[in-house]
Figure 1 (tube, one colour):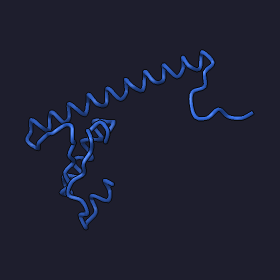
Figure 2: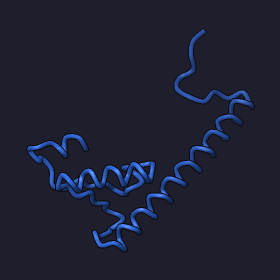
Figure 3: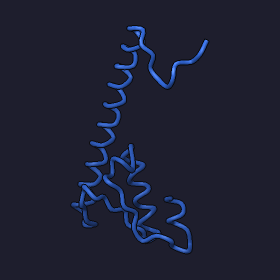
Length: 100
Protein backbone atom coordinates (compact mmCIF):
# COMPACT_ATOMS: atom_id res chain seq x y z
CA UNK A 1 0.00 0.00 0.00
CA UNK A 2 2.78 2.41 0.85
CA UNK A 3 4.61 1.68 -2.40
CA UNK A 4 1.39 2.18 -4.34
CA UNK A 5 0.69 5.43 -2.48
CA UNK A 6 4.10 6.75 -3.59
CA UNK A 7 3.56 5.95 -7.29
CA UNK A 8 3.73 8.78 -9.82
CA UNK A 9 -0.03 8.74 -10.49
CA UNK A 10 -0.73 9.62 -6.79
CA UNK A 11 -3.67 7.27 -6.20
CA UNK A 12 -4.07 8.26 -2.53
CA UNK A 13 -4.06 11.53 -0.61
CA UNK A 14 -4.53 10.01 2.85
CA UNK A 15 -3.95 6.66 4.54
CA UNK A 16 -6.13 6.14 7.61
CA UNK A 17 -5.09 3.83 10.45
CA UNK A 18 -6.79 3.11 13.75
CA UNK A 19 -3.59 4.02 15.59
CA UNK A 20 0.08 4.26 14.73
CA UNK A 21 0.72 1.12 16.79
CA UNK A 22 -1.57 -0.86 14.45
CA UNK A 23 0.37 0.38 11.42
CA UNK A 24 3.97 0.14 12.67
CA UNK A 25 5.77 -1.87 15.34
CA UNK A 26 9.08 0.00 15.13
CA UNK A 27 9.60 3.72 15.83
CA UNK A 28 12.36 4.12 13.23
CA UNK A 29 10.36 2.38 10.50
CA UNK A 30 7.33 4.49 11.32
CA UNK A 31 9.26 7.72 10.86
CA UNK A 32 10.94 6.45 7.69
CA UNK A 33 7.61 5.59 6.05
CA UNK A 34 5.83 8.72 7.26
CA UNK A 35 8.58 10.83 5.70
CA UNK A 36 8.42 8.80 2.50
CA UNK A 37 4.66 9.27 2.33
CA UNK A 38 4.97 12.99 3.09
CA UNK A 39 7.41 13.44 0.18
CA UNK A 40 4.83 11.74 -2.06
CA UNK A 41 2.11 14.09 -0.81
CA UNK A 42 0.28 11.44 1.22
CA UNK A 43 -0.77 12.01 4.84
CA UNK A 44 -0.95 9.22 7.41
CA UNK A 45 -3.84 9.85 9.80
CA UNK A 46 -4.52 7.98 13.02
CA UNK A 47 -8.15 7.94 14.13
CA UNK A 48 -7.27 7.61 17.83
CA UNK A 49 -4.13 9.76 17.92
CA UNK A 50 -4.81 13.14 16.34
CA UNK A 51 -1.48 14.85 15.67
CA UNK A 52 -0.59 17.77 13.46
CA UNK A 53 2.51 18.60 11.46
CA UNK A 54 4.11 21.27 13.64
CA UNK A 55 7.44 20.40 15.32
CA UNK A 56 5.90 19.69 18.75
CA UNK A 57 3.38 17.28 17.23
CA UNK A 58 6.10 15.52 15.20
CA UNK A 59 8.10 15.04 18.40
CA UNK A 60 5.00 13.69 20.17
CA UNK A 61 4.41 11.23 17.29
CA UNK A 62 7.99 10.01 17.62
CA UNK A 63 7.60 9.55 21.38
CA UNK A 64 4.35 7.65 20.83
CA UNK A 65 6.17 5.48 18.28
CA UNK A 66 8.87 4.63 20.81
CA UNK A 67 6.31 3.72 23.47
CA UNK A 68 4.39 1.59 20.95
CA UNK A 69 7.62 -0.23 20.03
CA UNK A 70 8.39 -0.84 23.71
CA UNK A 71 4.86 -2.13 24.36
CA UNK A 72 5.07 -4.46 21.36
CA UNK A 73 8.35 -5.94 22.61
CA UNK A 74 6.97 -6.35 26.14
CA UNK A 75 3.88 -8.12 24.80
CA UNK A 76 6.09 -10.46 22.77
CA UNK A 77 8.18 -11.25 25.83
CA UNK A 78 5.10 -12.10 27.89
CA UNK A 79 3.56 -14.22 25.13
CA UNK A 80 6.80 -16.20 24.72
CA UNK A 81 6.99 -16.73 28.48
CA UNK A 82 3.38 -17.98 28.59
CA UNK A 83 3.95 -20.32 25.62
CA UNK A 84 7.06 -21.82 27.21
CA UNK A 85 5.12 -22.39 30.44
CA UNK A 86 2.24 -24.00 28.50
CA UNK A 87 4.71 -26.30 26.76
CA UNK A 88 6.40 -27.12 30.07
CA UNK A 89 3.03 -28.19 31.45
CA UNK A 90 2.43 -30.41 28.42
CA UNK A 91 -0.08 -28.21 26.62
CA UNK A 92 0.13 -27.67 22.87
CA UNK A 93 0.79 -24.11 21.65
CA UNK A 94 -0.48 -23.57 18.18
CA UNK A 95 -2.80 -24.64 15.45
CA UNK A 96 -4.69 -27.95 15.35
CA UNK A 97 -2.79 -30.81 16.95
CA UNK A 98 -0.78 -32.75 14.34
CA UNK A 99 -1.76 -36.34 13.65
CA UNK A 100 0.61 -39.15 14.35
